[in-house]
Amino acid sequence: MKKILLVLSLFLAVAGTLAPTSLFGFDSAQLQALLSGIDRWNDMRSSEPSVTIDLRRANLEDKKLENADLRHALMTRARFNGAKLNNANLENAQLLFSTMKRTSLKNAVLRGADLSGADLKNSFAPGADFQGANLSGADMRFANLKNTDLSGTDLRDSRFFEADLSGADLRGANLNGAQLLRQAILRGAMISNNTILPSGKRASSLWASLNSARYTNEDEQSPVVMETKPYIPAPLTSKTVAQSETRTSGSSQPADALSGSNTDKVDFPAAEPPLEEAPETLLFENISAWNTLREENPGITPDLESENLDDAGLEGADLKEAAMTGSTMNGAKLDNSDFTGASLASTSWKRASLKETVFRSANLQGADFERAFMVYADLTDADLSGANLWGTRLKGATLYNADLSDANLYDTDFTDADLRGCNLTGARQIDTIFNGARVSKTTLTPAGEKATRSWAALNGARYIDKEKNLN
Image (cartoon, rainbow, N blue to C red; front, side, top):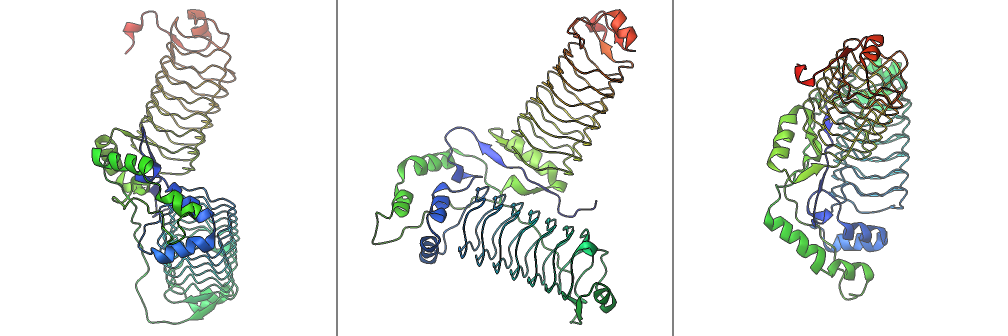
């Protein structure tokens, strides 16, 4: 599947005493202010319009935020599932990779907002104004978009299965590469010659007629192509750490603003001034830049817990020590990536491509590698206890001292793999392929016993007497 918006959602967690507002997290005082009452929030925004609103990664699920003034807010990766944002103003907001499943956006204003990669499945947004917004790569399956203004939007590679676009304004929208548009409802939608179809061609009156849409002819304009401008923080310095600590321990102004003790003046809790644009949205084609960032900032590690990275293209990414518990990488391309020491328990890698990927000392307890392609992967000292390796291709892989106890090895291919020191105690061995796999007396079989020559011969494996002879 062709995607032009392949964005690596790599969020970082800073160890030690850094406040979450200092780099990549939301501003807790601002979040409290927003949730304390929309009228008061809007008053504070009116009195301090220049204050940067930082709600990145904030959890706003099921919150009532009708009429909220969220213009220009930084809300990358924020979670709005089930929230009510009717009539809210999100003009020019940064909403990259935000989740808005079942969110109510009736008559909301999202003009110029960056919603690239956002999840709007089953959202309810009739009458919403998305004019000039970046919705490239967005998921709008089953969304109610009746009478929405989508004119001049970048909708490349977005998904529209069963989306209701009846009466929507799609003039000048770029739908190049969009999927399942023919399964969407386009009855009465406004189309023009400046509307770019999924095929990359301009819309015609015939196409509009075949899809029950209305057609108008305009002065021809170039297709809308928007550039995502992620928000990257500056490298950590002693100055930024000191500022963060001062703000965390010394300032009482946000508390006053929230409690209402200062009745003469409403003080808006200000976020730290933006440092630079953030690595959370580094583009896939710029993996080398991400790797350089990690090399230059060894004190920070990726925080990708419970993230959806299905079908992502992250070949060669440096994800050492990453916190990714519960994340899904189904169908992802991660060849030559490095997950050394990463926390990967309960992750899912179904059908993922992991050729020569490094998982040294990684925690992969309960991970699901069903039919993953892991030839020549390095799993030395990895914990794969309870993992599902059904149909996993591990030809030539290194599993030296790996723990595969209680793993599901149905149809697993260990051809030519290194299983010396590997713990297979309690593993379910059904149609498992051990042809040419190297085992030694340090290998524990599924029965919990040390491997022997006879066990190796019975399973087509090679028994190594002296491990120093291994090459």
